[in-house]
Length: 249
Image (cartoon, rainbow, N blue to C red; front, side, top):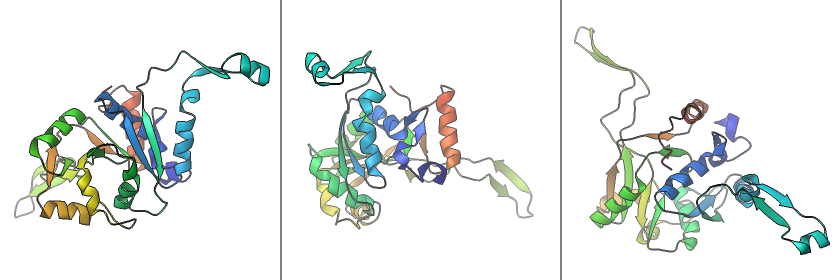
């Protein structure tokens, strides 16, 4: 992704003219969740600028300059307000080199409730967020992770003993499960996070597994992480063609 991320953080890489971060937030908002804590690292100031300028960049507006003009009417007047859900976004600096668990721990001071959701800033899906939360409540454990069956990067062949190809499948789904992110977590999970070097996907998740506190929510629909320029192009093609499965709003 160097073509896109050398000068901006990956969450600001655009799909259809909007940052992938906006698409992820819209997915949550469609399920009724509007409060976000963004854990900032690489070029986090650019994400701050995006939200500080969000209203004027998405509206026509009139600006009144000078003391008399400003005192007569509001110095800034928006016109034809964009039809957008109300987002409440807390932008938390979590360090340039902090690992994933350390970022969650630093950002946790802004959490309001015992239950919170966690995901990454570079993947989109048609996960039913409301059902995910309902599923989490149903099992009573500390953590839920959304899982999906990944697609093989390669064509898969079955061979007879003499080398004859008996079956070929072009990039089939595998039989294993992989994390798609989209976690639901109880605040007690924060006790497993040990400072900036902590990698959430390592010891914390392993301890949750060992203590039988991690349950998988199986997702059979669409999930796509934007890790390469080719994947960036593919997601934009889906959006431009009106066939973006993650557009649930």
